[in-house]
Length: 262
Image (cartoon, rainbow, N blue to C red; front, top):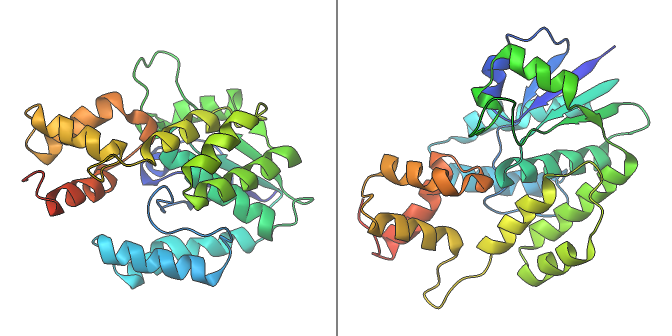
C-alpha cells in the first residue's frame, strides 16, 4: 500500500522519524493564515503570489521557496492509496489543513485514496499542550492509533466551503457562515479557529486589529523585547498558532506606525 503523511511542520517531522509508521512524508511549510490567498489553490497565480509575498517579507529566496514549498507539492499528484493529514487545532494549522483538503478535492480523484485526519487539541498528561512538535515518536504513534479518523466526502466539501469563506477576508460572510453552520463533521477544531479569525478581522478607530491591539497591550505592560512579547502572546493566544515570524508581521506594522520601539 502506498501511504503519504502530510505533516504540519518540521518540528513534527523531527519526531515523526522516530515512529514506526510506514509511508512517504511531505512537510507542509506554508503559512496560509497570513498573506494573499485566492480560491483556486491549484492555480499557478496562487503560488506565484505566495512566493512573492514570502520572499518579500521574510528571509527567504525564490530558490529556497521552490525547494521547501513548491517541489513537495508534486507529491500530491502521485498515486497514493492512503493520505494522512497531521494538523493541529490552531488557526495557523486549520487554514493550512483547509488548503490541503481543498487541493485534494480540486485535483485528486478521491475515489482512489482514503484520506485520514489526525488533529489533536490536547494530549493525555500534558496540561498546556501546544502542538505535535513537542511530542515524541511514540506519542505521535499514540495519536495515530487513537484519534485518526477517515474523512468523508462531506468533510471535503465542508473544507472547500470554509476555504472560500476564509480567503474572502470578509468578516460579515464569516460571521454568517459560522451562525448558519451547525454540523462540522469530523472537523471539530475548525469552528473555534474560524471564530478566532472573526475576532482578528475587524480594525478599530486607530486602524489596529485584535492581534495588533493585543501586542500593543503586551508591550505597554512592560514586555519590551521580542522574546518577552512572544512568550506573553503565546500564553493567552495559542489559538492563533503563530510562530516568531508571524508575530513579527504585526510587530513590524506597529513599529511602522511608531507605536512601539524594539
